[in-house]
Image 1 (cartoon, rainbow, N blue to C red):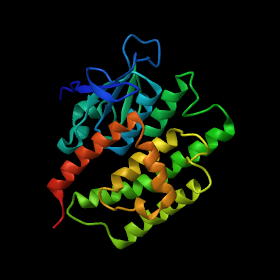
Image 2 (image 1 turned 120 degrees about the horizontal axis):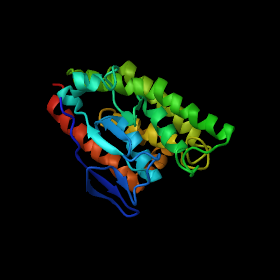
Image 3 (image 1 turned 45 degrees about the vertical axis):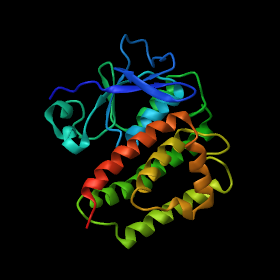
Length: 247
């Protein structure tokens, strides 16, 4: 299969606009000295892909986006399997090296910049951020993945899974009751990470409105220009959900 480039976005301080060939933010700072920007393989319908894209946009990092259509099973085709045998997105290819986990990709992108806005150098600050990244990886996203997979198989979420989801949101709401962001007083990559997962689940299980602090946190994130990436991905998700809606 030939993987082609698609129309991407140009990030500005005002809005995100269409741009061809490259995922470019303002002047498009590159993450290394390579002649070509790193390649990001993914589908905007995926929360982890949107997480990486928002991180890159916020950090003003230039990426080349190669779309992998999950609904056409392109992630299972031989061409992509040679890149990532795990058959999952996102994947970041930097020269000949490949990174196959969204959390690792986001941390790598942060490490390549001088800015410590999203992932500061302090060991304690990073521990707090990592704690929330791991919470997404071990709790939030597995529930999200299970419920949405069931949905696309024609099944609505069970009461048990919905309760699990609300319990996971309760933990975050408690954390946000003592600080405006998940890891403290400033927005970090864990906020992008968890928000992309939670916003996807909102398309099936509307739970944010039950949690005051969580709702306030999401409202603040939605004001960010780079969050347009998340909105566009959700539109794509909702389109496919309309095609597979359980009876």
